[in-house]
Length: 192
Image (tube, rainbow, N blue to C red; front, side, top):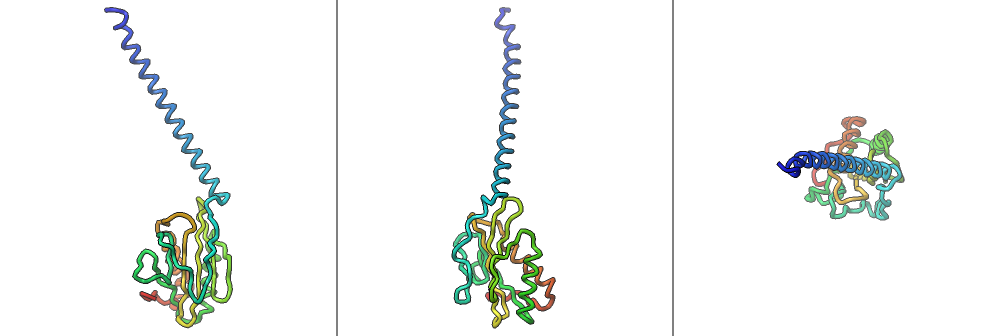
């Protein structure tokens, strides 16, 4: 048996140990990189990197809120009722509109990370900021006393999908209003 054959098992063992060390080093680098990316994203959310710009088309014009874009990150009670991706029922109120409007303000003020940006004669604009990343969604309400409705629009500023967050938010607001108003909040009417 020559010296070459005797060295082979040792060389294999050394190569295997080197491979384990390099795999361990690579794993440490991957973990460190993931930690840095997570930290940057969290800090970015904290300083408002993901808040986006306030849209210029917000507000009520001729009794209408701005339409939703074609992306799936917006719901509106004024969208076509056949548009299941964007349409959501308005908040239908029974009884006095002033009481419903006051209850809506109370619900919004009780929510964390909500800033009421504008409130004037039956119109309200609030900004909802997500807890972790600091994403901002614009939520608008428009009182229609004649129809006993509060029209609503909720849209994300960034991205093309919101994973249903805006729809869930409006339904949570509806539930909170129901809890405050009881029978003075009517169930949603389809197509209105």
